[in-house]
Amino acid sequence: MPAPNPRPPGPLRPSDWRIGIWRQFLLAHASLMRTLEEELQETCSMPLAWYDVLLQLVEAPEYRLRMAELADRLLMSRSGLTRMVDRLQAEGWVRREPSADDARGMYAVLTRPGFEALRRAAPVHLAGIRDHFLIHFSDDELRQLGTLMDRAVDDAQGG
Image (cartoon, rainbow, N blue to C red; front, side, top):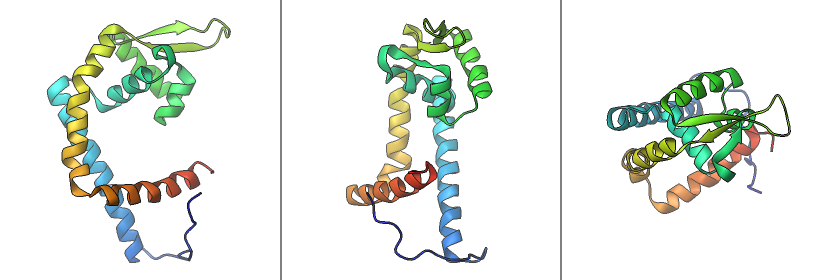
């Protein structure tokens, strides 16, 4: 388990230098996501959110996930995911299947055309991650960043 911060920061002011780091983190995230979104749209006519859905499904057993679990993995509302899956289904990239053991349950299932769309988009997205993020850090820095982010994620998820 990662070591906790040895000294809690105490009350903060908007001018605190640590708030500046937080703002840089938010700016970096927003800028990177916008750039990755634009690249996928321009090259593959695919929104980044669709890519994320297809990626979750390709990594799932039998290329399928319950809609509720998919929403949780994507940090989306269930209604927002339902609308997105409607669009992916209209595109032919995903289909819905009812759950055999729960009449109210529904699965999102990756289709062959969805798999092919993901296969075409993955090199674009991965190159974007490399070119706009990874290139700025050494492997040691990335490992350290991973350790630091693990702490924040664990805390945010109640771990």
